[in-house]
Length: 173
Image (tube, rainbow, N blue to C red; front, side):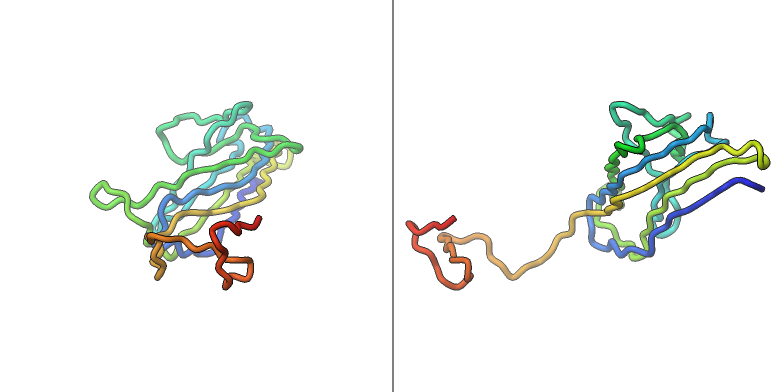
């Protein structure tokens, strides 16, 4: 009854047409837990129908403990980062597949969720933990159609006013 389960969940995100999504964030996690049943943090995304856990890449100084690398969810209880040097995470989010081929995402209700859990069997057996996040960024590539023709035989360089063409010998810095 004293355990703590907190979620930080994004609003619906429209990722329709995007490819190669990448989630970046900085994290500091400290816990006295000795296993997942005592406390953990987890990073997930909602693909429009289910929540899917994301695997954090290990850094050079701390490898978050994963009891079974093939199993989901990926829940981490070991310390990650420190108060003076947070751990920067970059995670690729798998593209959608149709017939085994990557295709752009189509979701308009994509979400991200960060979970923090600390167990307590009573007021004397609490497993202290802290999870802090900063600089959360979701990015990706999106094909766009433009009216520009980038294939031309000649190139014109313009002055800073964007209307006066410069001659071939007048290349200002």
